[in-house]
Image (spheres, helix red, strand yellow):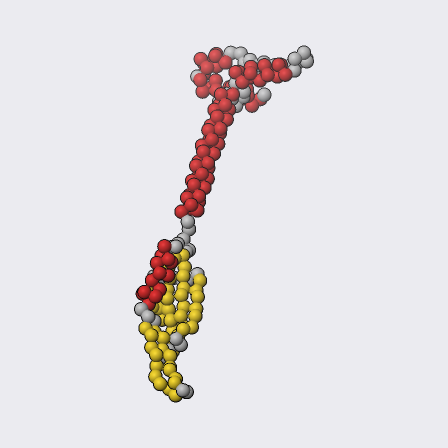
Amino acid sequence: MAVCKPIFIKDKFWGYATVLYKEKRLFKPTFNKLDKLGYNYRLSKTFITGGGYQPLRSNLPAKSQSEITCRLGGCSWKMEAARKDAGQMPQEVKSGIFSGIFTVVINTILAALLLNYLERGRRLSRLLDTDYLTGFMSRQAFDRDVRKYLDKHKGEPSVGALIDSDDLKHINDLYGHDAGDVALKTFAKVL
């Protein structure tokens, strides 16, 4: 950094006083502190001859978050600073987002597996409770539901019907099992 001032003695120009400061020694403590605190920085100045700010020392890759300007020796000085991690997501936030997404994915998979399991159970129950040929309730399901009904309505009068088709064995033996199946399906449709 250079400071140049005209010197007048008894109102007559005598000459210039020039002082040179080595920027590194003058600003080194400031730069060290900024480094320790996790900041990038840029020191810029304008020259007496004009023009915009020219960087003298910088490790600031992007736009600054704050700046200080001052005038000294006919030049404008500007110190800019920004956090080194500016614009970056902290690790704690990244971890929180990851574990949140992971939890949602795992819960979705578990819910899908549970729904699949429950649906398979319902399908299996329907298969066990229904005669595959006629679509009617199986004998085991009928017995179970009648027992539940009678337990629930104890002492109340009830009427039930059990229908048996005779000579189905004779149809199977005479015309084959396919004909017996057709006879059962037809009987079921009629009911």
